[in-house]
Length: 345
Ligand SMILES: Cc1ncc(COP(=O)(O)O)c(C=O)c1O
Image (cartoon, rainbow, N blue to C red):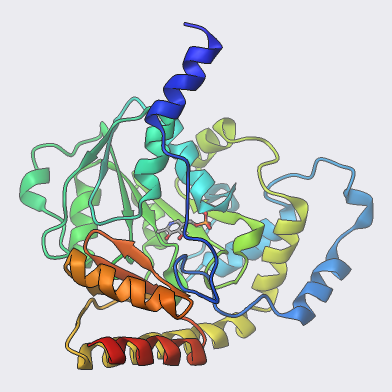
């Protein structure tokens, strides 16, 4: 073996990470349709300490960690600083967790967030796939296999369907003793979290991100909540300065001004509900998404027809094996989307 063979092998086996090219209206990546408020950008710069720019700044920053503790604490439950760490987006945390647990059996339940498998492939980690049955976890196929030697990656709400799993499904998974990585990337759009359970279950990891509700996808800030011993292990494996100073300042500023984002989340949720109702009234099979996107179940040929017609009008959505995933846009963008779909159906 030499390096050229290694490079060849990678090129043969690993697909490059690709997304659809940007279009006039881009509804393919579940981004926040509203940009980060300009007045807050000013505030970020005022908060930044210019004497820190040349330094390696810790991640998480102490002030940011304090804000995070306040933010994640909920319903009388209070998080501890030792239960939290950060990543370069939730994606990096997923990558690091796969690296940490590469010798265990990894499970995902398709349709699910595609990056679990993409990153596992890049790391040479095998992934076991047990398909959901009508949006439910297939307990029968799993009860003999899940145990403490397994790691389950599950987005809740799910991506691409956007539906929330039932409490009983989550508690069933936790009781198998498998390590459960519950990806709450869309938490703010549904308000449902299992974070307080990290006190009780040392096999529970919660992931969250600033990319969606806080409109900071460009800054790559995610965080992980889990038992202090797991966080300690995670901090030893991840890179020491994995999150930029500017990114952390932006996330902290967003938290300090969260009422602005909460108002916008409300608007996005209203638009999501409008999209769901309208698409259903066109006779489409729409899932009960609790996120910032909607999902329409379609046969591949129907999906392709609608996908192409939307593209012709400059609207990009995401094609999946089971149908189309459409991020909620600004109201006028959603109007254009609906108008195009009405013309087709
Ligand atoms: C379920 C889920 N997890 C994680 C991510 C990635 O988040 P981040 O931008 O923080 O890497 C996404 C992004 O679409 C997602 O849908």
